[in-house]
Image 1 (cartoon, rainbow, N blue to C red):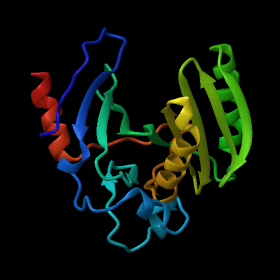
Image 2: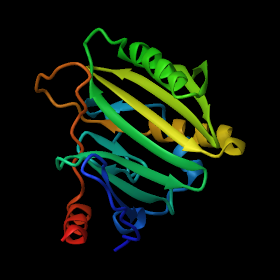
Image 3: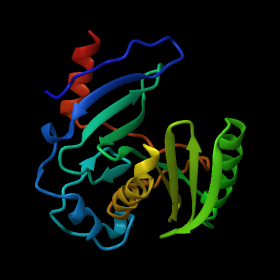
Image 4: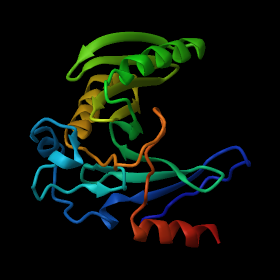
Length: 214
């Protein structure tokens, strides 16, 4: 297994477990260039492309992961998975999906709130136009952040990459590439707007985390 670290935490902090993606990928031959070459998404489950492109199935999202990347699983103290981070040489990439209104427009609201929160934390924030509309770039200490959001049918996908400032443009492109080939599985059940869509780990990863916690 690819487990190589588990950080001790307080009751309020999430558990973090790191994994090698190659242990769980059906096809580890995809390169970063192949990620960029995919047709534009992200895709709703109803329009997911019928291809052999390797994606990690996390329940609510199926994400492409570059060859050689590692996974960091962030657990909520109450038990559910909070996030799955993809660790690459250009930065840490994270995608999460949320319930959204049929009318769309949630990302614009969230973007404004993110900018306000980042500035209150001392970050320098800029808004710019990206592949799917508004993006946020921020500089906080020695970390460069880029936020991308996409409004889909009753869902919103938010992506963020954190990396070194000198690689900001490269990490932003890596994030867009991941978003572009992601499939979102919203489900049909009603849920309040902004509810995070549940992340379900592959069985092998879930079992390994359970063993590590014993």
